[in-house]
Structures are given as structure tokens and as C-alpha cells.
Amino acid sequence: MAKTDDARVIQQVVGGDVNAFAHLLERYEAKVYGLVVRLVGNEAEAEDLVQETFVQAYTRLSTYREEADFGSWLYRIAYNAALMHLRRQRTVALPIDERLAESITDEEADRTLNEVTESRIAQLEEALTHLAPDDRTAITLFYLEERTTREIAYVLGTTVTNVTTRLHRARKRLSLLIKNAQ
Amino acid sequence: MTDKTNNHDKALRMALQREQARIKLPEGMAERVMASIREQATLPSTNKEKTKPTLIARWWPMTAAAAIVVCLILLPRLNERQKLARYEGSYVEVGGQREDNLQAIRADIREALAMAEIAEAGIPQADVVQEAEQEIMQAADDPELHSMLERMLNE
Image (cartoon, rainbow over all chains, first blue to last red; front, side, top):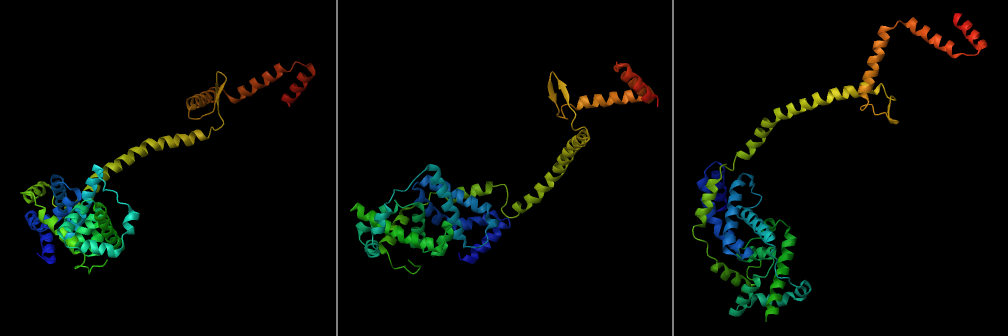
């Protein structure tokens, strides 16, 4: 389903065809669930949040103004719902020493994140779970969903410069976490 | 970091892809979401736009009625306050305590005004003057002063 198809389905739903929403759900549920479960780390809670996300999207569909593509709009709702949930639970990411993270050079981060070995991939999977929600979202959307920094900025409600800086720091943080684990 | 780094950080991409592969969608989640959506009583499109005029239409007669009631209560009070302002400076002494709050002593002011009205209506003005002259004459004990006052009053 292309972007224009999304627009057509959205028009149908806004026109009163509730069942047409199932097409949007089918297209985006796995992606939204994937992001949310990474953020909250619990499948049952993630399902509730995905449900909340789609219900919110449905009730606010008439306010969607195509300032971003529909997927980014959904991610933004899901990200905010997950963030609120984490705040209510007072879940905090493992504190990472910023000075130590900054001491990691770009070359060192490049080496760490490009070393395609079984152990390195496993280490990275573990390290990813320790990132703060905004870094985790930025990394997931950038590397997995191949979203642009502009789209990520829309999802996180920040600027493109901030996303670029965040991705840069997140790479260093991942490298530091792996370095500390060794 | 730019948007053109698709070949960078291969290990990180692979870690994310593996993680993604492990994530299984809960069975029947889409059906449950659709059921929640169908439960929503209102459609997303036009309802929000309709609620505003409906709310205004529902509330404006009540707002207008409330405004009229407030005016009916406040206007007579305002009017009375203006009337009382004419008697600024009046006071009542009760048990040595001086009370000059016009609102507090308005009953006394009304009573005094009513009494004055009754007195004015019942006694002819000449009688009042004559009574005052007699009081002055009685107060003058000195015979010289008495005769002087008598001359003055008779002139």
C-alpha cells in the first residue's frame, strides 16, 4: 500500500467507513508494535499501548493534516503513549556516564558497530535494551525502518539537528556499553 | 551522521533485525483493536466540528438568564448605595461606640428621615420658631441680656 493508498483509506474512514481502518491497522500494526515493545520491554503492556495508539489514531483521524506521512504520525502517537506509560511506571534507563561515552572516538564506534560477528551482534542486542527511550526510538527508526532524520524529528517532537546529535551519541553509548561488558 | 549511511553500522542493523525477527505479534491483536474502535460511539470526522456550535447553542440561553438574575440582584443594591451616599458623615453611637458605616446604619437613617418627615408634616413652622424663641429667652438669666434679646426678637 503506497502513501496515496493511505490517503484514500483515511478519506474512507473519515467518511464513516469504520471497517476501512482495518487496512491501516494491517499495514502498520507490526511496525508500531515492534517499536512499542522495544520501548516498554513487556509484550502485554505493549499490546495495550498499541491498542491505545490505534484507537487514538482513529478518533483523531480527522485532525491528521499530512504534515508527515501516516506512518510517522502513528509512530508519534505510539512513542508518546509509551513514554507516558514509562513515566507512570517511573522506569528509567540505565545511567550511562556521558563523559565516558564522549571519550569514545568516532573510529572506535565505527569499528564496534561494523564488526559483523556472532558475539558482537549479541552484545549489541543486549546493549540496545539499555538505551533511553528517545535514543532507542531514534536508532530503531533510523537503522531498521530507514526513516529520515526529518521523519524521526517529527516522531520525537524535536529538530533534525537534535536527532542527528542523538544518533551520534547513541552510537557512542552503545560502543561504551559493549566496551564495559567486555 | 547523515541519511546516507545505509551501509554503515552493519552489526547494529543486524542486531536490530534479529531483535525484530524475535518479536511476534500477539494473536488476534488486530481484531481486538478493531473491536475497540467499533465500540467508539462517535465517528472521527464531523463530530468534533459539530460539538462546538451545539455546546454554545445549549449554554447561551442559560448564560443570558444568569446575567439577568445577577443584574436584578446587583442593580437595586447599587441604587441604594448611591442614595445612602447622600448621608455620608452620618453616624450612630451605641454604648459609646461610633458606627459610621452607612450600610450598617441604613435602618437608623431611614428611621430618622421618617421621623423628620412626620415632624415636618405635623407642626406648623411658626410654632417651631416660637418654641425656639421661648427656649432662648428662658436660658437668658441676666435681666440686661433678657431685655436686649426681647428687643431684638420684637424688631
